Length: 89
Image 1 (cartoon, rainbow, N blue to C red):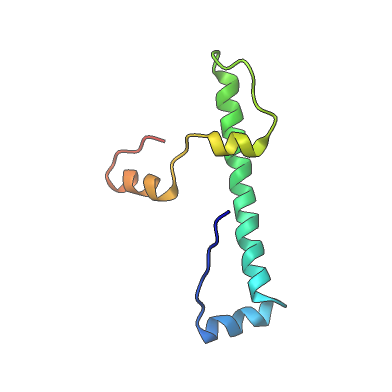
Image 2: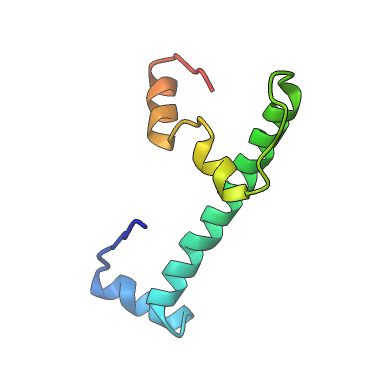
């Protein structure tokens, strides 16, 4: 498991406190919801790729396994390819 921490200014914390009962929980929830959206997208694309590949005879039932084993680029890698005009998706 990876731990990510952020630092907020006093004004940022005050603003989040205005819209959320717990800024910590709000931020954690926002990150987890966005990650779940990305997981669903990666899973869908990977299953479609596997189904189109005649050399793949079975697809794992575990969504997390499929996502963890997917050969995908990070956002930083995609950004580097874009800025260098070498987009490979």
